[in-house]
Image (cartoon, rainbow, N blue to C red; front, side, top):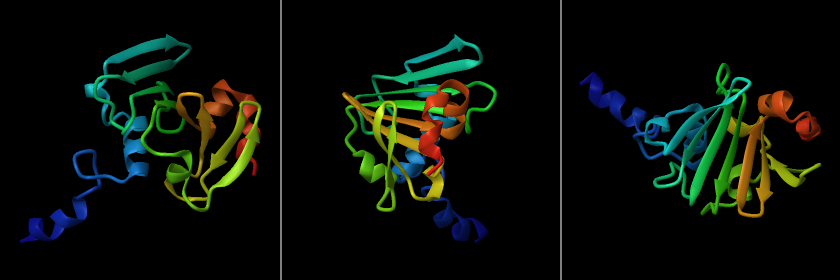
Length: 146
């Protein structure tokens, strides 16, 4: 009886359930899909990289996540090649445009991606956290001050 009451609440809460786009991004960034990655390696300086090309966890041609091996959930950078979603869809209606040394980007106005910067790239999207910017690309920190 208890399991019947709890089961509907668990759907969509993990990588096995149908998750919304934000959840898929966060599960990918946090390592939930690492077992299916095509490449897993260490880059040096505490950074690691995971890459999916055959079966990416997001609707895209390929996904690469670079992250701080000691603080993955707070310091990550994600490259999404040929995504089947836009920066605006990911950032949400309340997103704020920001200018960076790498061009115009979007900052979600709140929610689970509040501390993420979304930058369009020639082949897709780049997403990075405030923590990653602080450690690896301080020139982008100004985008987080708005």
